[in-house]
Length: 448
Image (tube, rainbow, N blue to C red; front, side, top):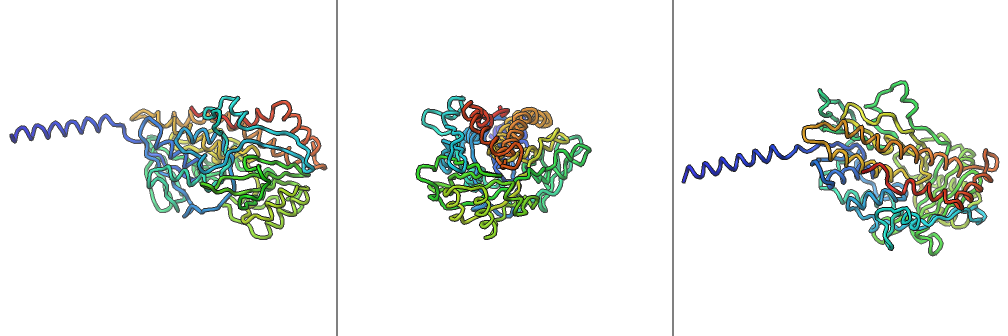
């Protein structure tokens, strides 16, 4: 009997050894930045099939502050999140129409968002399903955090440094006071990326890819729901005035909760107020009563209608920022183990509403490629393939967004002028070009 027990134990040990040899070691992925892109990457690495991965998100902020930031339009991002089992329809509001008008009420274009996406074959759009949503950044972040395994997100952990290990087999990272070993470091830490600054050097061409001011100032005015006209909760209203425009919209802020928001984009009025060139406010610090006064003054200068004025007057939070962008870098990865994504690689102006969408698409594309890294293999090939897949679609959207912002903020005294802008919107709406531009960002590209 003793010999039988020893023989059984020997077989069990042998079986465990075989299983340990057969199971590939998990890929360790350190993610700098707890925004939509970084959180989506962690979700994708924990849920997509393929090589096991252990993802940890290191966020510099010591807490996830509620009621911070503005609203987001999700289209291609909603498609990706649906694939990952994150249902934004529970907390967001459907976006079904975009209506652009002059401040005197003249209609320039109207886009039926759902019909356009359905006709283009958007993967998640059925006869009754919605494919585009308006959601606050806070609600999206909360939904993503809730989808992650416990302990995935670590707060108060700013990125400090990264040193590639010998032989290119990984990277040693310092977050806060903690030193960790990872196979891959992903810089999902925004336009002012610490990973980009500290790991990508200062070569002769690097100045080309630094954050650049667009000369456009934005004020976000956020009010409780119910301030906008009846029946407009699923509509974005754009009002084009002299030297700027206003976007009036409603955003899902959680289950059965809506916030109304006006976004004022201005060149003329902002320059008159001496605001161009001030800080970008990447930390989304709320403004004071002076920002509200400035918003009301800029709305008056641009001749905005009562809908816009009402939301501004009823707003409880204000955020002011200068629009910056970053041309997509040539070379998103270093040392075969460090890679940039989202705004750290290609920060785009907000005029097409594609910043969060493209960060989410980046996350899915990168996760899909990392999941295919063979046991014993290195991720260098996956990082290079990620850049090849995502460089063109993000570059096109960035340039289109920059051009659109330039046109939308034309004044009577600028070139080509507000009259040209209005004609451009009218013609592109009639010819279906506006729909094509929207769909270019609404349908995921380069992610599979």
